[in-house]
Image (cartoon, rainbow, N blue to C red; front, side, top):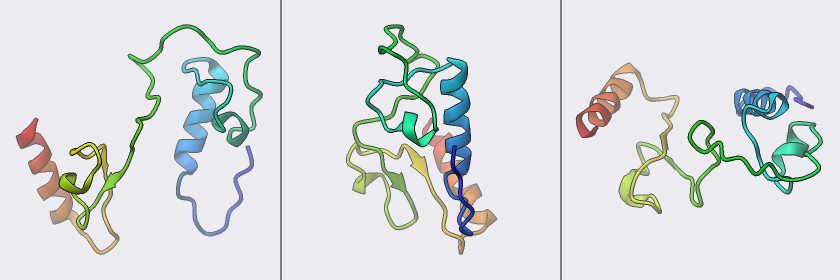
Length: 105
């Protein structure tokens, strides 16, 4: 796996975890996905037929972040899959969002 330090390490955690999950066989991915190349792994000879959907996230058709400027109403699915904070936001913003989420749950 080629991770080049350019001052931006965004996404390294996802790349490392994806590689571990694929290499150990804990999760599968279709042969045609670029995750195999990005993880510097060879895809299996054929796609794995087992279903690991209960334990492994395989993405969504539309996946977008929500932020202070773009909330659920702007999201294609009408809900947020994940929430990103801006560097200017502080602990109070995080706590407010946390309270909003647990109140809706």
